[in-house]
Image (tube, rainbow, N blue to C red; front, top):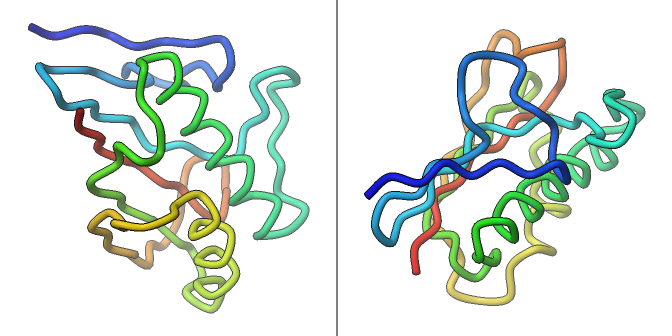
Length: 125
């Protein structure tokens, strides 16, 4: 059975997609960018601040669906500049304790609203 997940604690989708979809014991969270859900403003002053906002949005969606970062089994990180990898990785890693999810990091030519990082996740219970 498919369940649509939406929360006001994460940015509303900027296109025809849902924040997340749960199917059975899997949660597919759409790629998140550094959009502050309260102000609808981008947080792009630094790659660290941008990554923190992205992860905050992911945590809000996970929470709405009854999941935590410990339930994440797969992530995809999209970076405009691969030289930001170390800083993004430092912030990202703070959200996990052990049993890290599978992951790939992909360099891209551009992202929505000219952000520098976008992260999507899959979680399982």
